[in-house]
Amino acid sequence: MALTLHGTVSDNTAVLDRKDAKPLVINGNMAVAQRGTVTGITTPGTYTLDRFRADIRGGFGVQVAQSTDVPSGYGFGNSLKLDVTTADTSPDANGLLLLGYHFEGQDVQLLKYGTSSAETVTLAFWVKSNKTGTFQVNLRMGEDYHIGQLVTISSGSTWEKKVITFVGNTANAMANDNSDELRIQFFFDAGSDHEGGGVPSSWAAVSATKDYNGSIDLGDNTANEVLITGIQLEVGEFDANSIAPFQHESFSDNLARCKRYYQQSYTHGTSAGTVTNDGAYMLYLGATGNTFRYNLNFETAMRATPTKVFYVPSTGTSGKAGYEGAGDVNAFTINNTFNTNKHALLYQTSVPITGHPYWHWTASAEL
Image (tube, rainbow, N blue to C red):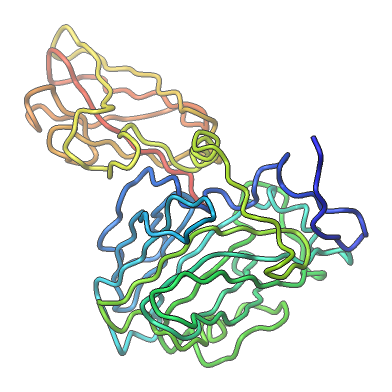
């Protein structure tokens, strides 16, 4: 296969375009949305479309959904749409309206942080909003260091491509493991604790007041929204003319990479707790009081031992399994042991039913 050069790194070796390697950002085209639409987000740490996390608090409320509104002519089928559902023109001091992407440390060792050869990276993405103004994009190393830039949305309700670069961190290394070591952060609004300190133009210790120094203030009206897609992170320094085109993966490859972090029994795009039998697991037990055992093998090894939640298919009740045709009647708790990133043994020593217990499950090993 012919390989195309699209830049150089600090040691003067060629950077190849990613035809033969996976994109650093998983699901940057927003094609995978296992959880479906996520509503009523008012707290930090809520995952939405796969690999993208909403950190919301301090009076703001949002909904995040998969949209088919995309920039034309670039091969995208979906975008992430963040709608403001609870507005606040005077958010609490700790208010945040933040969309983020988190990397495992072992996936970004190629950046050589903590050495004199630390790589510059280029971040590109498409963005659209009904509001114009600036928002802030930061790279952040865990809880310790960050660097940022302001990005301008020039035209309302128009797709615009943004390309920005960040120098490498020569002073501080990232752990080579599965922990949360690097983040891309899109700050669209914030309270006073997170603004006023200026944009960190070089790598520095995290200062909350340097998180958001923009003007877009997306959270001030429930009519506001922002859409984003085509997020890519490339090693090297590029501009809009020299950066490689977005690397589209097959949906199956994209989905498989996402399942390292989240899996569910529900069909793709169906929110946990939805009343449906599609995808539900079932066993037959011949007598009341029988021991229930089921070895749940995950579709792919997950990043870490996941947090699991169970649901009754016919009611959506969380934390329990149900009985076919009986809703929450004889519902019982599923216990689990032998928890690893590959499988779990589900059990109950005395099931209060005869017949077919059934359940849905979700498993999360997000950063």
